[in-house]
Every structure is written in C-alpha cells, then in structure tokens.
Length: 149
Ligand code: AMP
Image (cartoon, rainbow, N blue to C red; front, top):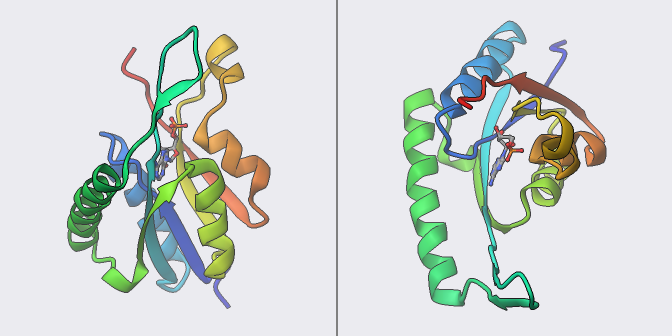
C-alpha cells in the first residue's frame, strides 16, 4: 500500500509555488500515483492604523472578487500540473488554520508547504508553515525555499 493516500499542496501563488508542486508530484509518483489536491486561502487583511484598532476589513464584494481571481489562478495551476477541479479548494480565511481544516475534512495524510527558513525576529513573527506544522494531525512536508533577500 502507498505510504500516502492523499497529498494536499498549499499554494500561495508566489514564484515558489511551482517548486512546491513539483516536489509533491514527485512524492505522489513514488507513491503509486496517490491523489494530489491543491488549496489556496484568500486572507482577510484589515487595514490598520498603528495607533488604533483595525479600521477596514475586506467587504463582501471585494471578497468575492478575490475569491474569483484566486479560483482562476488555482484552475490554471491545476491545468498546468494535471490536478482536477474536484481536487482544488479555495476559501476565505486564515491559511494556518484553514489549510489544516481542509486537510482533516478530506482525509489528507500529507500536507506539502513551502518554508522560507526564517531566523530571529522573522521567525518570532510566525509563518504559515510553522502554524501548519503545529496544528496538523497528519504529516507535513516543508519544502525549503531560497529567499531572494
Ligand atoms: P509563508 O509562511 O507565508 O512564507 O508561506 C509558506 C508556505 O505556506 C507557502 O510556500 C505555501 O505553501 C503556504 N501558504 C502561505 N500562504 C498561503 C495561502 N494563502 N494559501 C495557501 N497556502 C499558503
């Protein structure tokens, strides 16, 4: 039996996304072509004045526009890498929390994410890869990415 039955790729649409997907595809191929899925989380980003509370959050229209744009991006990635639309999820929320939830709801046994290997203060600020590693009940593969800076 294959080591993994269902691999979920967390795609943030950065320049590193292809590399993360290539790594996941290689793993899937080595595991009897196990099921591969893609997900993207559109984040809410409240505009904040440093001295005050968050002032403006994403409204419903903007949220729909962002979800539609994200859906197109995800579907292009799916076409490029041969991942069906019924194995693609796009949602509005928090990547660290919602990627783990999507994995649990769909019997995923490996989540593949990119990792920038932040150090010092950047690490203290946290990262999506870190959040997933801490909360996922399944295995997590953090693909080391080379930072530009
Ligand atoms: P970050 O911690 O934001 O540098 O992201 C590390 C990795 O987490 C990325 O390479 C993606 O695999 C994943 N990730 C980050 N943000 C998102 C997102 N909005 N949707 C899906 N995956 C994400």
